[in-house]
Structures are given as C-alpha cells and as structure tokens.
Amino acid sequence: MANREIPEHVPLRPTGDVPVIVRVVWTDGTEEWRPARAVRWTSTHVMVAWRDDERDPRSERHEWLRAGDVARSVSWLVPPERTGR
View 1: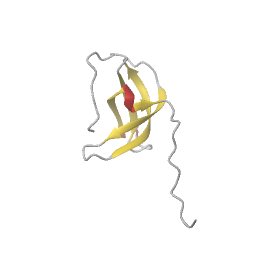
View 2: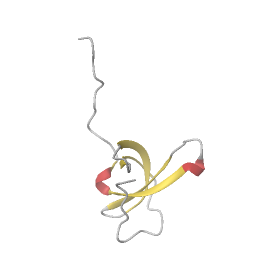
View 3: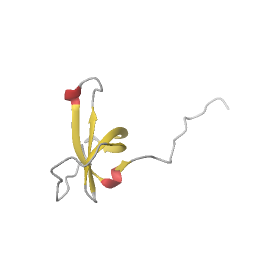
C-alpha cells in the first residue's frame, strides 16, 4: 500500500471497533474506497482492519492510515453514467 503511514506514537491496546470507509492507494497507483473497521487511533492516524476474503478470518489485515484517508460516512456519490438520452 502506498498510503500506509505509521504514527510516531502507537497505542498499544485497541481503541475501539468502529465501521469506517477508507481510501486505499495501492503501489501501482490504483485508488479504491473500501469498508473497514477502525481499531486504534491517534489524533493524526487510524489503524484499520479489513478482510481481503470476508469468509477467511486469516485474510484480515491491519494498516495504519492518515486520519484524512478514513471516514465514518461520505456525503458524495458518483451516479452511474446514463446512456441513451
């Protein structure tokens, strides 16, 4: 992940388990928004968890992201492109 960033001070214990939406930038430059859970946080960073395969608990990954890449909700929507008008 290209936008992974570990904070200077890391909480040692989980802080919570909050549903979030995260912006992930992969090393090839591809960007995606995906559901995750915030499990630790500081004032500047959030550790998020998600499963690459929802059925496989071993596929769970934990990543630190900047707080600006994590949201509890979004107010924007990109509507589908309409054709035939």
